[in-house]
Every structure is written in C-alpha cells, then in structure tokens.
Image 1: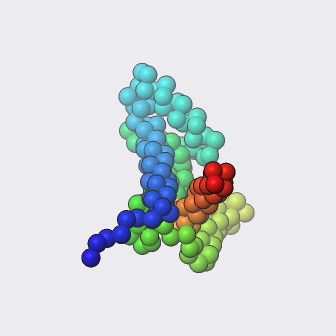
Image 2 (image 1 turned 60 degrees about the horizontal axis):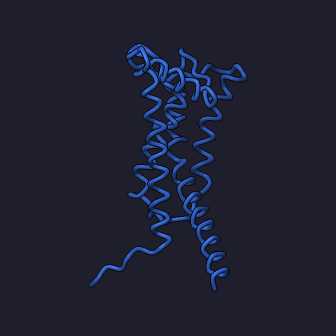
Length: 176
C-alpha cells in the first residue's frame, strides 16, 4: 500500500513546529551563552552584556536567585531558566504525545494547575507567609514551562493555518 503525501495543513504545521523549536532552542542557548561569554572576556564580554541586557526586559536577573555557570549568573533567574528549559523539553517531546497538526487543546485544568502552583509559590512570599526557595521557584517554573507547549503549539499551528488559508483563498478569488 502506497503512503499518501502529507497534506498542505500538515506541511504548514510541521514548519510552524520547526520554527517554534528553533526559536526556543536559540532562546535557551542564549541563557547559557551569557555567562559563558562573560567568562571568556574581551569582545565576548561585550556580547554577553548585550544578552544580559536583552533578558533584563523579561526577568529581574537577581544573582541570589539565579543558576551560575563558570561563576557567573545565567541570563535569567532560576524560575525563568526552568520555564524556558522545560518549554524546550516540552516542545521536543510534543510530537511523541500529539500529532504536529493537532489543533485541539488539552483540558484547561492542566494549565491552571501548573500556573496555580507558580502563583501560590510566588504569592506566599509576596504576602510574607513563607519565603519560597530556590528549589520551589525552579520546580514550579519547570512545571509551567513543560505544560505551555501543549497549548501554544496547537494555538500557533491553528493561527498559521488560518492565516495561510485566508491569503490562499484571497489569492484564488483574485485570480479566478
């Protein structure tokens, strides 16, 4: 029996997934590159400064709340590092659990539980009930980061398929 060629929607989904994976990989690589480049010094330290500055728009980067490599803090704090690394892992394993062209979202409860654990961890400290720990920040960040691709990938795939379909239909009508 001959295998059917992939559908147009599947090709779009695959390209969308590959783009998300590539962007996530580069983002995570930069988190590790910042301290490595600072360690190397010279022109690399200048690049490192730019990377730290770029990440400062998304993270507080407190030294005491960050993982360290070569004696220097990572590009973002431990919670953000855990979110981003877990997002990368979740993106990598996504095709083992779902089809790439899947646009159906999982139950919202998974996302609420993951986000709720992070919210509780943060709130306990904000309201002076209990200080969160390096471990609690990392674990709650990891949980949320791992769950997010299962919502964002189908959302992006659906969005890109809709946009491509819209422009394809517009083009077809114009040239009919």
